[in-house]
Amino acid sequence: MIRLFAPDNLEAGAIVAAAPEQAHYLTRVMRLGLGGAVALFNGRDGEWSARISGVSRRGATLTVEGLVRPQTVGPDLDLLVALVKRARLETIIEKATELGARRVRLITTRRTNADHTNVARLTAIAVEAAEQTGRLDVPEIVAPEKLESVLAAWPVDRRLMFCDEAGDASPALTVMTGAAPGVWAILIGPEGGFAPEERAAVRAVPASLAVNLGPNILRADTAAIAALTLWQAALGDWRHAP
Amino acid sequence: MIRLFAPDNLEAGAIVAAAPEQAHYLTRVMRLGLGGAVALFNGRDGEWSARISGVSRRGATLTVEGLVRPQTVGPDLDLLVALVKRARLETIIEKATELGARRVRLITTRRTNADHTNVARLTAIAVEAAEQTGRLDVPEIVAPEKLESVLAAWPVDRRLMFCDEAGDASPALTVMTGAAPGVWAILIGPEGGFAPEERAAVRAVPASLAVNLGPNILRADTAAIAALTLWQAALGDWRHAP
Image (cartoon, rainbow over all chains, first blue to last red; front, side, top):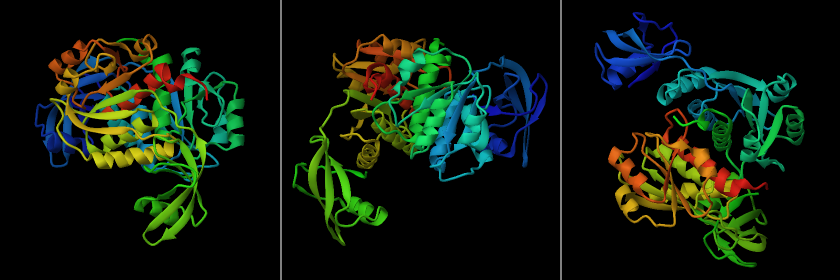
């Protein structure tokens, strides 16, 4: 079943205009015509069945039929990731979407080369990944912020899994299985690592828990995927059989 | 420190010829000259310090100095992965190297579109990833085999973590923390999933343990990275602090 993100309100009988690239995908790539079946979600109203009810040169309209799955909410898990090169950052967005992060916050650090990125493009990658992976929402992509500002405003109730490549942290699984579920974030540094004073600042956040991700040096995208996996397995949606 | 894989025997005083692309990297990209320091490993003799002792238009030679780290052997862990599109397959090779797989075996299944791949190119990716990640060996990349042949010859003593997206398997972390370390493999299916009879054949292997990787549909590369992470965290090198 083709799944599409549609920001409009979804209810029986609603008529939704497919975005131009969605219409192209439906009618040209997947070769659906009038009556073709699609599933729609918007992050609020659950997943709905719909059918193509109009096709023109400029687009397509979809008529919403019935509710297939009620809206569910995944864990309140942020991924904080330093800006890395574009290809790896795009991989991180795709994987964070598959692995159930609710929000991706982009961070600049002393050893981060870039200080901006194309948030709209990253959001489009998150939408496509959400369509593929079966999620009922799309993670929010938050524009780059400075690490020190983020730490200065850190909320007391959000625990922070700090992937600390430089240190003497305990194994990630040991730390995570000893922690409680709830409101969390994961912090992944830039490929050159955090500066010593940044590392100290993160460890000084009362809610932070430093963890070790094995003996090898991991790329930022690998570390992000590994940390999200261990969090989900120990504290998140992966704890229960389907 | 720049690390290079050099297949020659490594011992104090040995003179090693850098491969052409390695020489280009050392002298042009990293701008090292005579006396520049490099670390070498070959998968057998540990990691050695070396210095550039000759540079010409056609290459460079390195003189081996002293042993830096004795050879260590990671867990006996194979990753069996169905052939997927090239970009994702290359990601899987890079990540399997970072995450400590000893061997990657490529598999063809009923729903695999391709039946061949460029093993030399994939091996080059594994070499580069091993250089970056700090491993002392390079995972072997095994040319594509049919799933049914692999299962028919399955060794009794190699347990198989079967990432079963279609089923009622228990959560991966529950299964892995209940299992014993030793000789293992991980099996990841193609993006379209295994055919029902393939799934039944895998589950019929006495050494196989089906596991669930959460509620979302995962890309093959995501599933491979997640499974390797959980295996390492529960049964492998990630159990112990550095």
